[in-house]
Length: 152
Image (cartoon, rainbow, N blue to C red; front, side):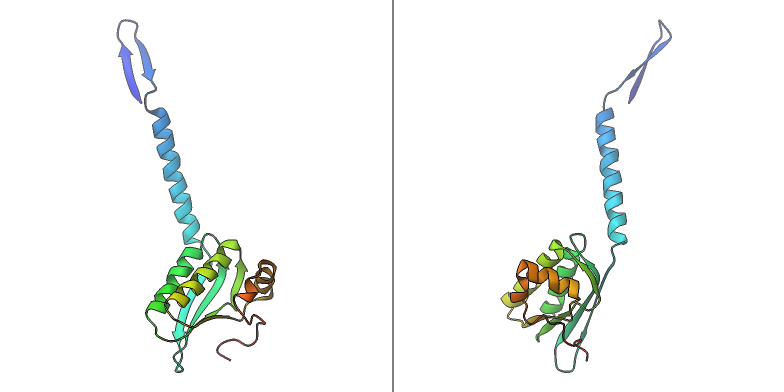
């Protein structure tokens, strides 16, 4: 904002140049900070372990959704790239999965297939099995009966 003084009339005239740009910049900064805050509060848990049988088990817990999907895919790709045996994604602790999460599971499986890595899902919650059946993805990830946990 520029301020100019008219000395003849002792009147201060405020020129509103750049106010819209400043407001847009402030909004962009606020949106970025809110996005960063959202990501820092994302309830996603990722871990993996390698069994003596050379299977890698990736545990995905919490919420797999549009906000967490890319992080989960990158994590599983990293495990696939660093491991030469089968990969099992254990969904026992997955509390929520939306369309973005389903897409992430598909991308994981496609990446594993391209890498020549056997890939399967294990122990999905009934709510995840239901959404996979509704969308037809249960045929892509057989069997999804829930069965036992990978470590049982």
